[in-house]
Image (tube, rainbow, N blue to C red; front, side, top):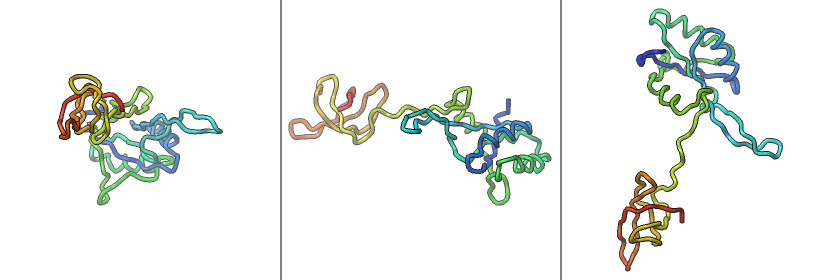
Length: 171
């Protein structure tokens, strides 16, 4: 297991070459991370699930080697089949902290398939209808979304705008 001090390089792959680049990295003994996402696409008139790269044309490669080996390691990675180059800044390989990769991995299953966070049911500025409480049935606008499907809502009642915290239903 890499230490939290380890960093990851970003390898640029050839177009649609991520799987072949991953195989090359695996064959060369490198630890890499290639997150994918499940998408629903139309194929021959049918909607099917497909795994696409979360970051098309990019693979993360762990740089957990001694500093004096780094040039050799970078050359080996860059010369891997279907890897075009490593992202650099001023001729120095740019890296991503291990904690950032761990955050992405925490949203992936064992096969590296990313699960996006759930979409919020309500957003600020959206029209809503109050589901319970003293303003039950009133319509208003969401000012701020709170936890547990509750929100701060502005309501127009008796000719003036009131603010209330309320349970929400789509409306």
